[in-house]
Amino acid sequence: MDKKTGAILATVGTTLACGFPGLAGLCMGLIFALAGAIPGAEIDIFGSSDPGAAITMGLAMLCISVILIAIPIVVGLKTLRNQDDAPIVEGESVS
Image (tube, rainbow, N blue to C red; front, side):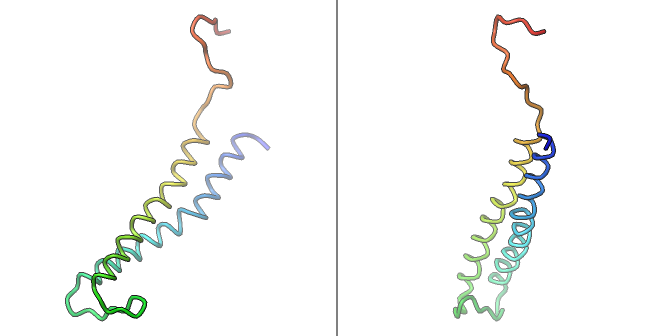
């Protein structure tokens, strides 16, 4: 397997495992945070009707989702960038 193929597979795998759930969590976190801010909304977060619980859960989901979305980006940048096989040391000639 080529090095580039492995990098692409790692990027696609992390996108499926982390990126898409992160996007879904981002949407749900935004909905929870906004629902907690609406006056008179019927909120039921684990048996609690406190709007603060909905806002807290929404903000926590937003933070976790941003981390999950960042994982495939970092993996893609780390694996797909061009790297030299050997580092160039000062004073050596490059052939």
